[in-house]
Length: 438
Ligand code: PLP
Image (cartoon, rainbow, N blue to C red; front, side):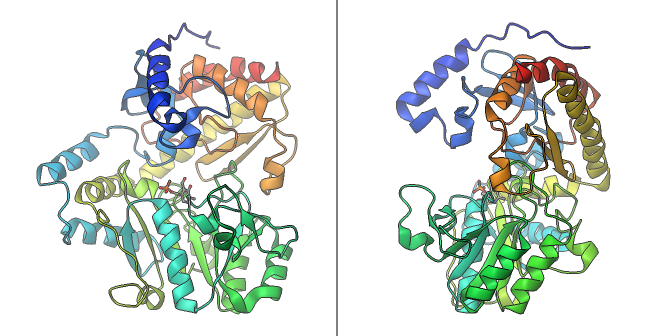
């Protein structure tokens, strides 16, 4: 069965977008929400329950964005809501330690190889702080990252590759001074030779290499088998720290994140890890942590300064703890089963419409590239047909399925994506894929 687009009024969203643009740059508080890559009006949401969003015009959508990852259990899970309500009734912030912080950190330490963890409020803070700590610990300055990996809007990481493979980078956006990126090396992802060359030339200056544990910010581009292990070993050989950014994959790809699927199996551990999204259950909570001897260098134990007025906020820790406690093996099995249903259905729809496509995934996190060959790095990702994705996106939206409004984003599932939600996606796919062919 396929679904005809229903007449979905966007009058109220249009009006709010006009109001928003009059007072906020682009009308949004984070750029990708503005629909610039796909055109049209972002839907202004009034409520969300389970797998469904409701907008100000009363339209309902199956949500495959899940707040860009955090909503592992779906929206407004009753036990998460109850935990938040109980926490908020006890006060919103104390600026002193709480038991909730200890318990949340213990839960994360139990699921991952980190020995010590510091809570912060956003993934950006987590990666920024991990890099400062790596520099403080090693006494070195150079940071290696990969093109297409996003680690938040940290100045030194908003960098574009320089002219040669092992040349230092240039600012990736106006507002970042050249001095902030001149110590950043940007390499092509999945390229062992580039990594080896960079370490051969600059190894004794490299404080750390940071990578998404499995990139999801250029669409999903999984690490080639053994690539993360190679990175960990290369860093160790040169006295640099290996920082695995699990802000997106952490507690989503498996109960131990991406590391649960590679490092835990292959027997290596990152020196530092960063987390966010799922661990806050939809509220602002994130973290960085790792080896005890490295974390020992952090204030107040050590000299490397880092702080936050709202770090470990009691409402955010309550939401995060409730979410992680409810993220059982059954939840991960369900996410896997839904992904196993949707991936082939997306592929079949594009195949039937004659649209070249590649579906790439890690765990239940997947995305579709409208291209005819596997995407292994950012240069390949940029070859994909983003105009066709825009047509596909809007055809899905018209049929009640809210995909990420960009071709370069992962699709996110939740425990609340039940048969009804999955069926709604399956019904919308064939016509939407045909729209991409047009
Ligand atoms: N690291 C990764 C891998 C991310 O995907 C993101 C955000 O999407 C960040 C860091 C930054 O997190 P935040 O948006 O909470 O600052």
